[in-house]
Image 1 (cartoon, rainbow, N blue to C red):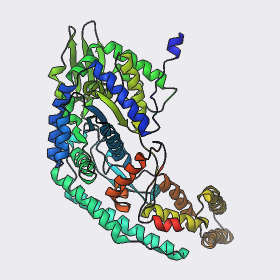
Image 2: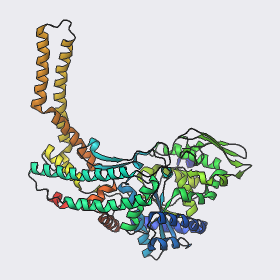
Image 3: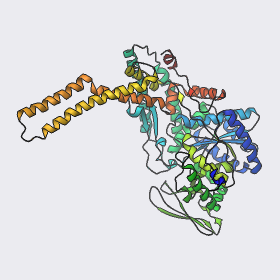
Image 4: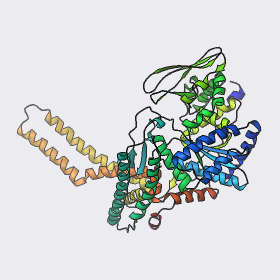
Length: 557
């Protein structure tokens, strides 16, 4: 390996602050405008954006104005994207907030800017977060209360019907019950510890009622599961927060990228080689990225009539390229001719394909002239690899930013965990957590070992044939002794306390559903506090301290 090969890396620049990111966006936009004209594709995109907002009910004057700005050749295009997760966690929505703050600062410099949020509605139902939403709950398994949608496996999200009315009503009652349970638990713990709870249950329920009104509107306007969740996000971002962020379904807009898909097919050998090299370079430097055999695959999925998708294994010949694969759901075999005598055949299947994780940024960034992309922590690995591939194909890659800190705030679930810690450890000092947990575990193991030792003695006696009366009495005596140990040490409570203390830490580090923010802070206030944080030029990696109705109580403690 020569020196130039040794220097090759799969990586992305890190931007610590909004101002650093602004400078990078400006510089990249200047260079990209010198190399391409993106106006026609942006105008095509605008029709699908309008359709989404009409369906969602968020086509207001600000959205109309932003759509018109897509026709401006000088317009800066900021992008983010995500799956339409069930009651998405904060990381999904804060992407829109970072883009909004970026665009506001760029507009202050008299620049024309649009924010685009792509909804990855052709992703499969298998991912946990598209069908699961978590709330903090120290009393529950793993410290979480889970809302869950029952979805079929291996089906695209935009092919699954929205939940039944019964399911929606059950979710509503479950969340209300969670609020009641947490407040009751806090009051009980506070009384036991001699602390004045001073909780306002009505405030939490009023906040939830406002949030659920959004959910019901999204439900009424949607037909499919992906739209139901995407409409909730849009209504929060566009209506509650007042952003002019433009939303669009990937299933609608990917058909405008014929030229970009066509380029990847005609240069498949170079693409495949770059993907293979990126995979090898990334294996020692980053976490989960694209699969090791990605370089052998056609850079898009093929959609089956059953609602699922097929990976297409590439079969390149001298002047042709064929993709072969099997549907992940119904197992139907596909053989798709993609290049014939050097000519692309993609026009015939454009409506039945969708970009893979690696090719999505290659297609969207080059087609739309994206000058900044706000990604998620989970997608950084494949974005690093996509950048390597793009540059090896002679293209460029815009600045990529992430903003997924830990939000530090005290809601009803978090406050219950704090009081539980105080009850079990006798202190509010979190530095004592580890030593307290160790003591509890050691005491529990000690008692458990003694009970199991007596159980082993019982089993030995039970194996004796023709047991005399004395042996039976000995067995009974051992059982009595086990019961005494359990009773006097309160073993079941000790074991439960170990679980509760472990759950306290899980609650502390949980990135919960946006429901938790809505109930404890209120959606408007969440937006205001996030924007205030970003406006102070704080680091994008710094934790964010948010104020809640319970904050005054915890501050006193």
